[in-house]
Amino acid sequence: MDTLFVHPRIGDKTAAFLGREHKLLIGGKWVPAQSGKVFDTHDPGTGRVIARVAEGDAADIDLAVKAARQAFESGPWSRITPSERGRLVWKLADLLEQHAEEFAEIESLDNGKPLTSARGGDVPLSPDSILARPAIGIIE
View 1: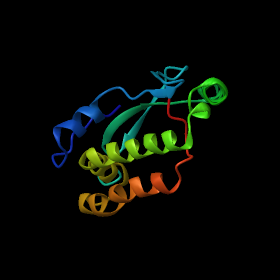
View 2 (view 1 turned 180 degrees about the vertical axis):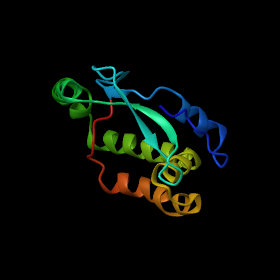
View 3 (view 1 turned 90 degrees about the vertical axis):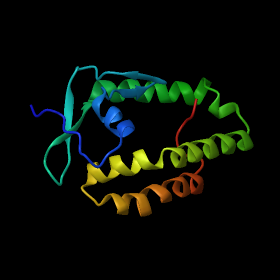
View 4 (view 1 turned 90 degrees about the horizontal axis):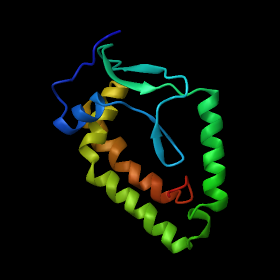
């Protein structure tokens, strides 16, 4: 197994994020894969391992579907007003903008694209995509 490689062009926050354990978000909690398996994510430009991520399988999918169904049927999202949902979606867009540099660095490494391309295109357009489709996902 390769050791994690910290690219010199990324900042400390991104390096810390990539170096930590990456679990699955199920039922509002970060959990390891039921199997305990992880997979390596590689920088396509260098082939080096940039992160290790929980490897979800059918058991994890079943848990996630059950949690999503429960959240939809009895969680707060289905009971809040459209204006409150909109406020939460705007908050998500604000957080994306607040952390734009880290997202750009991760996007650059994950896709092997120039950092300037991620900074100038992918990341700035992400909040627009969220705001164009405000009914996506469940925010608890």
